[in-house]
Length: 108
Image (cartoon, rainbow, N blue to C red; front, top):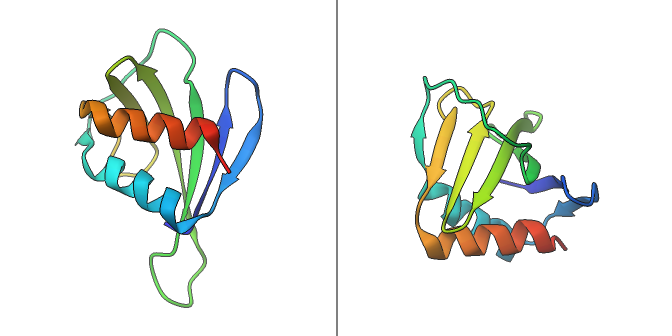
């Protein structure tokens, strides 16, 4: 992950997260998400964060953009991704949810 552009739905402010430390924290949280690629999900409310990750998958090729809609629900987070092998995901590790929420909402 090279950077993340995220928009908080509450205040509409768009931020870029590019520091290696914060990207590493986000990646560690994403590594703990349990994905269900073939699940169609609809949420009752609008997402808390709309994030776009910029990933360099192949050397000398353009970055790939993946969009994530993220809902924070206390000790869990629900994520809907447009990446084929991800789809619908749940993050249930309370510590990682807190880290993800603080990094995304704080921005840089």
